[in-house]
Amino acid sequence: TAVISNLTSGIVNYRFDEQQPRKPFEASTAVAFAADFFAGELQRHVRSALPPPDTERRAGVAPLVGSTFRRRAVDTQDDVLVLLHTSARLDNEVARECTAALRALESVAMELSSLPGILIASLDLAHNDVDHDYLYAGIEPPVLVALGRGDGKAKPAVSTDDLDLEDP
Image (cartoon, rainbow, N blue to C red):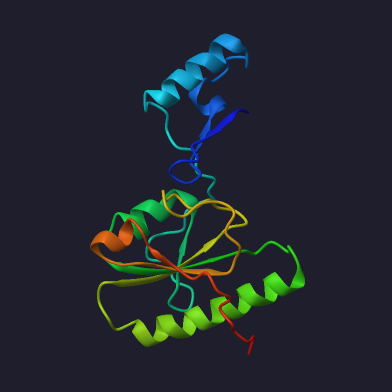
C-alpha cells in the first residue's frame, strides 16, 4: 500500500491500492497515482469502523466514525461538540482520561438534550480517522472539538490543554 499525505492542508491520505486495484506497485503506476493526486482526482482514504445508525445515542452522545464524521459533524447546520478519544490501551493514564472525558460528555449531552440544533458526539481514534482539513492525525486524546455554525466548521475550536477531568 502506498499513501500520499498532503501536509499543506493537514494530513489527508490517499491509498494507492484503492485507486489502482490489482496493479503492481511499479514506477509507471506510481507516477500515474501521483499525477492523479496532483490533478485532484483521488478519493480521500479515511479509516473507519462500521457506521452505527444516525439515530444511535449512548447516554445522549452520538457515536461518529471516520466515514460519517464529515457528513454529521462538518456538512451540517448544527453546532457540534465532539470528543476525540481512544479505546486503545495506549497507557493507563490516557485510558483513564478518555473514560472520564466520555462520562463528562454524557453529562453535558443530558443537560443539552432539549436544545435543538446541537449534536454532542464522540469519535474513537483507535478505529477511525477524522475527515477534516483542519483536524489531523497526531492529536493526543482526549480532545474536545467544537464545530460551530458558519466559519466554525472550517476552523473548529480545539482544546489544546488537558481537559482536567476526574474519573467519578
